Amino acid sequence: MVPCYYEEQTIDLFYAAVEDIKSQLPGLELEYWFINDGSRDQTLAKMRALQARDPEHVHYASFSRNFGKEAAMLCGLRLATGDYVTVMDADLQDPPDMLPQMVEILETTDYDCVGTRRVDREGEPPIRSFFARMFYRIINKISDSEIVDGARDFRVMTRPFVNSVLELSEYNRFSKGIFSWVGYKTKYLPYENRERVAGDTSWNFWGLFKYSIDGLVNFSQFPLDIASLVGLFSSLFSGLGILFIVIRYLMYGDRTTGWASMVCIVLFIGGIQLLCLGILGKYIGKIFTEVKHRPIYIVKEKK
View 1 (tube, one colour):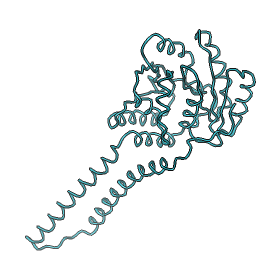
View 2 (cartoon, helix red, strand yellow; view 1 turned 180 degrees about the horizontal axis):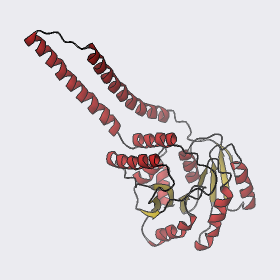
View 3 (cartoon, one colour; view 1 turned 90 degrees about the vertical axis):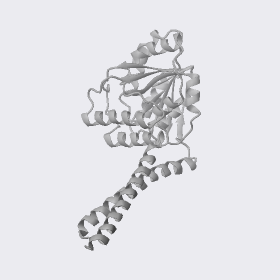
View 4 (cartoon, helix red, strand yellow; view 1 turned 180 degrees about the vertical axis):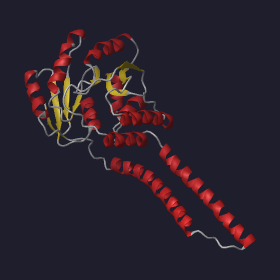
């Protein structure tokens, strides 16, 4: 299953790379599902042409608009019919030559899923690498689901594993967390980071930042706990400050001066309140999108 967004330059290269290692997967018949996530270039045309060349094995689904990679992954998992299902990016940053080893582990051991993780971030901007490492540290401390640092979506899963993932039909999805939450026995294989074979990535720093915030909110209530603790300590210290001012006035009779400092304190407390309201609003917004029960994606064309 291959989610695609503006991948017109990589689809044929991906197909050729996987076909090259097909002989190393004896006894397995490959089924390709390319999911066009609302691309406006020639991605869909490339899918149609590839499906016409190999109609027995190649299939595609095209969304009515861009719904995001999470929606494309869910669609692919629903459409895949094999006993083993793999998620791969079309840009070949997920190396197909790892597939034989991954399948062998599933066939010869009791693992239910074999995932991959990058051991380095060569080629990434330093600021992005720093925030990525911080994200994994934070979410593993505040969430019940452990997410391996550097874990990719690239993995091979057994049918029971996939069926369990599909039982989680929530609208707000964070697949790395879902893969961990369902349990099962998972093995991660390390590999060195690879560059895209062609084209440009559609991910930018702001998009990854929002994605990480969604991951934190979807799999932890710790931000709400922080808001409660901040409110508690803010009220406590404010009460002590008021008590101090009253006692000083009664004992010494001097007026409380310093309107500038008072304004700063008011603004500080107001900022904390807005921060807590923002955290609460984020969770309420998630609830709002869930209760509307809108479809996670809309397929315009499938073959």
